[in-house]
Image 1 (cartoon, rainbow, N blue to C red):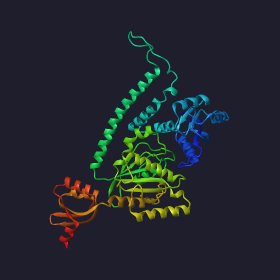
Image 2: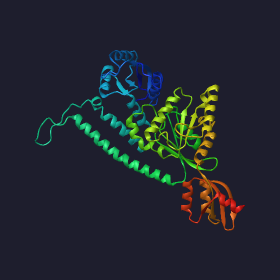
Image 3: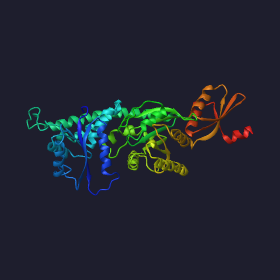
Amino acid sequence: MPDQETAIVIHPALKGSAGARPPEARLEEAVGLAAAINLHVVAAKVVYIAQPKPATLIGGGKVTEIEALLNSFEPRPGLVIIDGALSPVQHRNLEKEWNAKVVDRTALILEIFGERAQTAEGSLQVELAHLDYQRSRLVRSWTHLERQRGGAGFLGGPGERQIESDRRALSDKIVRLKKKLQDVTRTRTLQRAKRKRAPHPIVALVGYTNAGKSTLFNRLTQSAVKAEDLLFATLDPTMRAIDLPSGVRLILSDTVGFISDLPTQLVAAFRATLEEVLEADLIVHVRDIAHEDTNAQCDDVIAVLTELGISADDDRPVIEALNKIDLLSDDVRASTDAIARASHLEKTGTIAAPLRVALSAETGEGVSELLALVEVALTAAHDTVTMIIPASDGAARAWLHQRAEIIEETARDHELALTVRLSKKTQGQFLKSFPAAQAEPLSDSVRKTA
C-alpha cells in the first residue's frame, strides 16, 4: 500500500453481546493493525448493529452514515477497514456504496503478514493464505470475470467463463504452493528431529502480538531481532542458544504473536511454524501485564495453544512472564509482584496454573528471576549421578562441563569421577557417545568415598 494511505476503521458490534473485550478495545486494536502497515487512520468508529445484514453486514442507515463520514474529509479516504469478517457479497456491495476500497480483518492481517515475512517459508505461507482468501472473492476482486472463451476443437458451445478459468488457475497455484510448503515442512521436521537428538532443551516464547516477546528474546540472547511497538513485528521464528547462570545451555525460540480471531487461513498456513511450540521442553508465555485487556489476551493465547494440541493436562512446564511492569503504577506493580510470588507456592507450572515472574524486558528488571525459574523448571526432573570416565578422555569431560551441572570433580587413579546433575535424556546421550564411561548412582559413590 502507498505510504500514508488514509483510511477509516469501523468495528461492527452486536448490540447486547458481552464479549471478553469491550468494542472500544477491539476498535483500538484494529487501529493498531492499520498502523502496522503505515496507514493513516483519520477516523475510527464503533458501529452497533442489532443483527448482521446479509447484503452489507451493518444495514442501510449505517452505510449512509459512513458514506457521509468519508465525504466529510478532504481528501476523501480511499480505504475503509471493517474489523470483522465480510462475505464476498457484502464486500462487493460496500465497495460499490462507498466508492472506496474495503478491507476486512482477515485481509488486513494478511496484508501485514505479507509485508513482514522475511524468510522463504514465511512468504510461501502468506501467499498460500492470500490465495485461499482470494479464491472465495473472485466475484468481487476481478472485473473481467463474465467474459467467455470459445470452446476448444469442433464441439462449439459457449466455452469456459473467465471466472472458471481464473478460479482453476488459482487452484493450480495453491496446489503448487502447498507442494513447496510440504518440502519446507519436511526440512523443518528434520531440523526438529536433529534438535531433539541434541542435548539442549528448547524454550519457546509465546504470547499475544506486541506483548514484548522479541524485546525479551533480544535481552536474553544479546541479539537484534526486530522489536518494535507494532502488532506482528515478528513473523518468522528465530532461534538462539543461551547459557543459564549454572552453565546449562538451552535453545530459545521466538515465535509469531497470537491475536484474537486469527484468520483460519493463517492458522492453517502457519501451523508448521507454530508447531515449533509443540517441540519445546518449556513454554514461556509473555504477557503485556500493563495492557487493559491482558486477561482477554491471555485467554486468546491459551485458545491458540489448545488448537495446536497443547491442552490443560500437558505436562511440560509453563512460565508466565508478566512483562512491562515498568509501565505500572506502584500499587498495581506491588500486587503483580505478589501474584507472581504466590504462584511459586503452588509449584505446578502448567498452562492452567503457570509459575509467574514479574519483569520488564525493556529495563531488564526481573529477567534474572525468569532465568532462575527456567533453570528450576528445566532441571526439576534431573538426576544426580557420578560419571566415571578415563582421566585421559578430555572430550568426555568437556562434554559434561558443557551440558550438565557439575557438582563435584575428583581424580581416582587413572579415572575422573564427576558428580553431575542432568536429565535422563542427556545421560543416555552421554553414555552412547562415550562407551568407556560408566554411571554410578550418587549413593554408591558416596559409599565408596566414605
